[in-house]
Picture 1: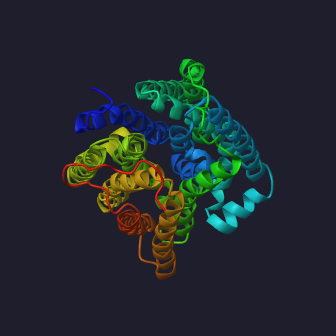
Picture 2: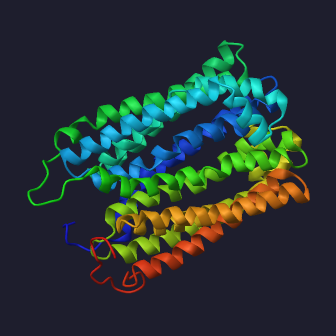
Picture 3: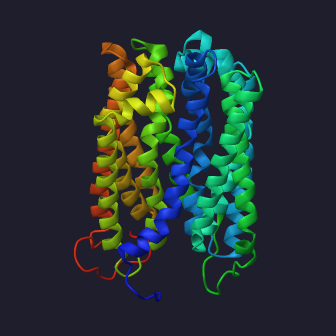
Length: 449
């Protein structure tokens, strides 16, 4: 295919599937964690410690560097720009790791877990141990996502899938070894596996990206250098997007802790979240594809169609699982949940069926706005999500509606729906000539005023 040939669904698929495979492998991490830890002693407390404290806090701390993948894909066009983004990655990774240690090692831990999250007292000890083990997590994620963006720019997205497969394989190896050869508590087994796995993937990606780094061209004459101010204007709104989105994890934990059946809801959340994340994750992979291809002939139309196919397929898949015996069988036999948690998780899964579809369309709209350097609009959309989701969670905590996890899933679905509608309206205003239905016209390549 020549560079001037229109972008087709096949080309979108070729770029998307290795990234989707990578996200699917990452999505398998939480179910694997659950499958091993649920079979160890005191599993309900150990799962609650991870789902209510370790996982939300680790995700929230890493939030500002998650979008390094999109930034690297969009900005690292030459050696000079790459060095500047790399420098930012190293500084941000170090500062966020320091924040992680501060939360874990100081009285801030008690204030966050007891006053903000309100988790049961028996969860606190295992949760602190898990956070200590997860200390390398943030820096490893920053390093990995920065270099993955370079691989995407170099049309080497398959390397990303291989790296994530290595990560999952290492996770299984460590979980199996630690659970069978040691008497470690479940939280130690699980978080050790997660930490070792993500470090393994980071080192693999750094090794594979070496040739890409060596072949980066110098800055082209006449082009504007990537200045600190221009980078921060681009990246800060982008970084706030996952940071604000990840607030739903501690918000959800705090709300569930204040609703009936708190411990059961908190213990059910990791396996249920992991199950929802699997079909949702392949929608995340669509975001970088939109950023990389949009602006080429025919890309808008092909990407729009692909996004709808992806949204409908993932919703249908999750709905099929939730309405058949696949859901209870998976939660009981694959993940090892006790019967009372299986029922709760199956009901929650049915309520979450629309979330993967919303994610596919969110990736389309966010990718369009990032391509046109309208990152502030992406951040504003997350504000809409938090308002709707947070309002629903607060109402649930006050009204005492029943099992907290079911109400939390409904709140997350409502928030995703509101965010999608807001982004759709914003994209229509920002890029009114974006042709997504008929034969693609010339799409603007640069920013929109």
